[in-house]
Length: 278
Ligand SMILES: NC(=O)c1ccc[n+]([C@@H]2O[C@H](COP(=O)([O-])OP(=O)(O)OC[C@H]3O[C@@H](n4cnc5c(N)ncnc54)[C@H](O)[C@@H]3O)[C@@H](O)[C@H]2O)c1
Image 1 (cartoon, rainbow, N blue to C red):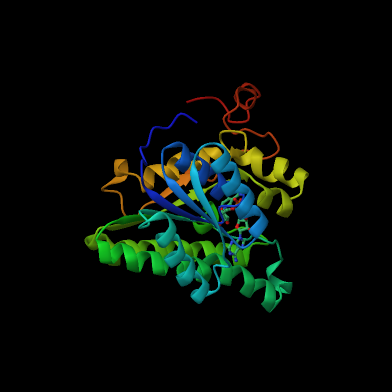
Image 2 (spheres, rainbow, N blue to C red; image 1 turned 90 degrees about the vertical axis):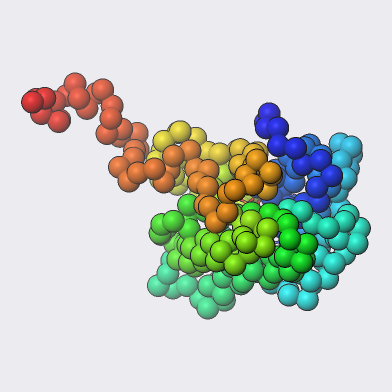
């Protein structure tokens, strides 16, 4: 990653920062000079990430936080500002994606996904937004998904939560933009993280997902970090309410490959399946 997005002396909070995309964003933010708070429900992940960043010469603190808990979110934000200073940027990456067929989905599975991915995102962003509004400056990036732009079998709860994240992001952008607080989303495609591997079998990943990605491969977590940091940075000073797809082209069109069948391949033209050119 060679992005140059100066974050010198900025304070950045990353929820879900103990793993995957959030961790990669926190690492890039520190490399660019930010002081970072890693908030994660799993204390060991938050601690390990913050410790790794400090060992590398950066300034980072770990906060154990369940984003579903409003009071804990308020307290965490107060603590982060007391220890690191006013929060300039926030990335809301905490999320879960357990597969479940819609017809047999339990109330518990539905509610947990919505509570963490959507309600929890709102509860963690709200106290940060309040403080940014009072100061008249700040930038927030929510981690949505291409599943916020279309459906996905066995992910009704997840797609509903991510469509909600995009609606929430746009509404906050409209409410807060004129007060100096920008709110944008990134919509990752298939990203090589523990969440992906835990929830999608390797065969399915290869045949049903990677095959359909126009770039023909998974995203590395660090490839999500540059776009997220861009949206946090002054380079995006007039970007507000946007949803930036970071998906290798997955959402660019419908008629992509399946099991290697490439509609644009020379072999199909040579075999005459398209008939004689007029
Ligand atoms: N990996 C992908 O392919 C992909 C694609 C699109 C969007 N996303 C989104 O990106 C975000 C990060 O996903 P990832 O792939 O890095 O997953 P990950 O599992 O590697 O990281 C998610 C982190 O969120 C934390 N978390 C979970 N519930 C929490 C809670 N209630 N409070 C606080 N922290 C909590 C986990 O402990 C974990 O450390 C999620 O919102 C996910 O939906 C991921």
